[in-house]
Each structure stands twice: as C-alpha cells, then as structure tokens.
Length: 445
Image 1: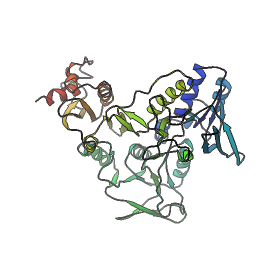
Image 2: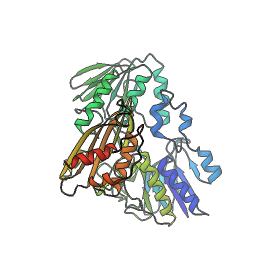
Image 3: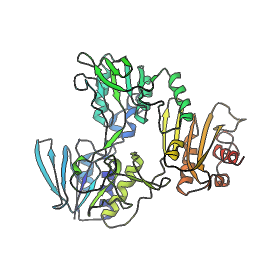
Image 4: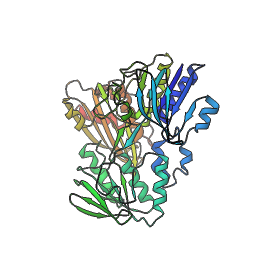
C-alpha cells in the first residue's frame, strides 16, 4: 500500500513514524514545501536570545534520517497544488526543478499545517523589514535584518508569538511597541486577568497602542513608518503576528468538508468525509471536550497527537482522538500565563450559564514565601457546578495548577470535587490547601 503525506512537520511525520512502526512492506512518501522536516516551531522565539543556541537544536530528525533509517521517502521543495480524489493522485510543483509532479496514493494524509496571516496592507511589497515568524528560515531572515541598525521593533498583534517576540526583542536590547487592534493583549484571557499582563509589559519598557488598526507602511527601501487609523509610528522593523490560517487551498474542489476558516473537518479517527483521505494538525479541526463541538486551536501538542492517531488508523489499527480542553501556557518576562477550558468571554458567547471565582494566593505556603503571588480564576456551571475553565497568572507554580484543572476538565469534574483531590504539599511548593482548592472552597461561600 502507498501512503502519501502532505507536510513534513509534527503531524505528518508523527503519522509516518506510526505507519513504519505498525506495518511493513508499505511505501511512504512525505511531500514538504520547504526543506526542513520535523522541527519545534514553538522554540523559534527563544533562538534570538540564545536560550536556544541554534535553530539546528529545534530539528528532531533530518530528511536523511527519515529516509535512510526508516525508509520514508522525503521529497523536499514539493508543493502540492491539487488533489484528485477520483483518481487518487496528488499534483504539485517541484521547486528544485521548477517542474510539475504527480504522486498516486492509496491513502492520503493532509498535514499541511498553517501559515501566518498577513493582511494586504499598503506598502507591504515596497519596503524590506516586515516579517512573520513560523519557520526556521523566518528566524534566519529576521536575524540577518537585525544586524542592520535596528533599534526599534514594532509588533502587530498581542497573541502568543507577539508576546514571546516582545520579550525576546527586549532581551536583546531593542525598543518594542505592540500595536493591538482590540483593547487588550493576550485575548484568550478575560479582561480582568489581562491587566496584570499589561502591567508586566509596561514594567519591562514595552509600549502598547490599543484600539488601533494598521493601514500600511512607508519607507525608503526599508520600513520606517507604520501607518494606522490613528497616526504614524516610526520603526526600524515590523513583526506581523495577527494569527494563522490553515494551508488547505489545494483541497478546493475535492468535496472535503472544511470549517469556517478552511480547517479540514475530521472525525475521531482523523478521517475526512472522503474515503482514504485523513487530516491532522494545524490544517484540521480539533474536538473540544468542554464546548462539545469542533474547534480550531492550532498547537504542537494537538498536531503530534492527531498525527500519531492518523498514522495508526491509516494502517487499520483503530484509535480515536479524545479531544482537547484548550490548555495553553506562555512565559512573559517574570510572569507565567496559563489558561485551560473556557474563558468568561467564551462561555458567554456559547450562552452557558456560569459563575466565576477569582482569588489571590501564593505559589508556596504564605508563611514560607510571600514573593510568589498568583491570581487564579475558575469558571464553572451555574446550576451543575461543572468546571468550565481556569486562568492562572503568577511568577511560579502556574504550570502545575493549570494542568490539574485541565485534567479535571477532561474528566468533567465539578468545582466541588477539586477539594477532594490529593495534591502534593510541602511549604516551598504549596499550602495545605492548593490555590485551586482555595478557590473551590471560596465558591461555596
């Protein structure tokens, strides 16, 4: 049997490895538009401050390793442009030879990922110094540009990449401004929780312009000004970080069902509605266990899991993707920002009747250390008291608490059941009642 995989990163190569490990005698072809396979995209912002010393450290396996050790045919610079479901043929362009190619398949996995959104602002093509960050070549392009008298960096968008790059650019001594179209950065958090994020940004010397929409760029050869609906901002470099969109344009005309943004709809087996076509990773939807519907939250954790599950199902070893609860975490200077499940904004938009409880606590026992403040917010059902989500911001201990709540969400626990959990305790790490249990107890009052 011949398996063709479109995309050589997390989901695609996770699937390929499962096919290798769970079957034999098959042909596996992995088509990749770029030249780099299986790398850690989430580590890209940390290369600028040398917390990750080299982009080579982010590469899990080279194309040669996949080919020589595992027998997977890795075809770099092969961009897919069309899929013919009737004939089971993939069409595309080989950018090495600048010629067309075709690849037949018995089973196809679409793992083409997502690309940064870059609106068609005026002046985009007239000046250098405007970047997005998604790939290792992007890092090299930005690094090279930073060598040319760049003192001020403007970041458009205050999401994950925007915040991580703001920290990295400050870390190498650049002045940083964030332009945000809305009224807060880190929009996955509720407004009350976002205030501490704003305060940390200001404390670190970052300027934020809220409620401002970019319209274009000006400069002589290189970008010098960002033009918005409210005025002009001088700058030496721009990073656009306003989100990503699934790479699924080549599936047009196949009849494969897609979501509102082009993400491919899949069932628990990673199957599409077309026989023998699967999808996984940032180009596909994920089932959200709390919302009880498909969602689109493109993260590396989901891509690896979906890829593995697609791989075993493609070789007829049925296993289902159990879904997500929307967990994420980010380091922002001295703060750790953790979120899982629904925010208050999301619960409202879904018309869920809910209550919230917010407490101020500490990472360690209060008598041991008062230097690790933590703000914790729980969202839960108004009638059934089932947990719906949590947001935690603090200097330490956020990671373990957000993961406890994520586990509770997975198992549909109530806020009251949090009190019964047997959580570890010693004064350097916790109080006798963990902060999430403190919040649960307070909700009863």
